[in-house]
Length: 258
Image (cartoon, rainbow, N blue to C red):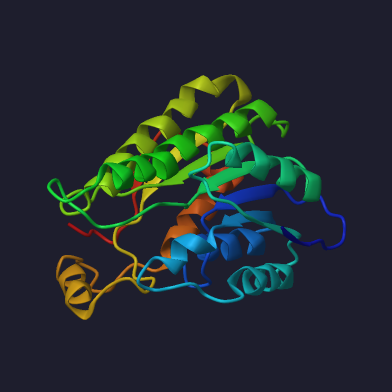
């Protein structure tokens, strides 16, 4: 765990999962919330990046921590394999020791390995559901159990996808994430916590081929690809007092991608 603590402030704390690369959506959200006055705790898992085509980004956690500190945020970075059912409780323990209780939970973590109906393995299917669905439930459960912030200030936000063709375990497990996250809308109503899901559409963070990029552009009316900042602006709004009335929604923030 790495911690960078600034001067004592009354800044609320956001826990953001899946912040492993400086170009990722999670890092973009972390920077936007830090600029809006939040302290930031984040998780990352280097072995995931090591087995993906883009590879690991050396020193990413330290670089992100430094960028957030420049925005005045106290930060804590926790490396955690969210396929481990004990990891969510450990993450909250470490975050609370370093920075205190969590006000907003933003879940950007994922397992995403392309495979379809015929070539998905049972091992891959189970790992996708362990990371994308079970860990989402366990993180939300820990958050609800430990929530101590003022009623009406709590936020739960999950990032999802509706892509399933050729991407079966990812899309199916993200569908489960939707239902799990939105259940908190009603089950945590006594805490006045809002819960929403964002589908950001295709965001090029280094995984697209030239052919894939051209295909995505052809299906996006605004004639550009989404950026981490596009998602970050919506998360920032949902976490603000002005965003409190948006609750229990699956929001498409994708430039009209079809």
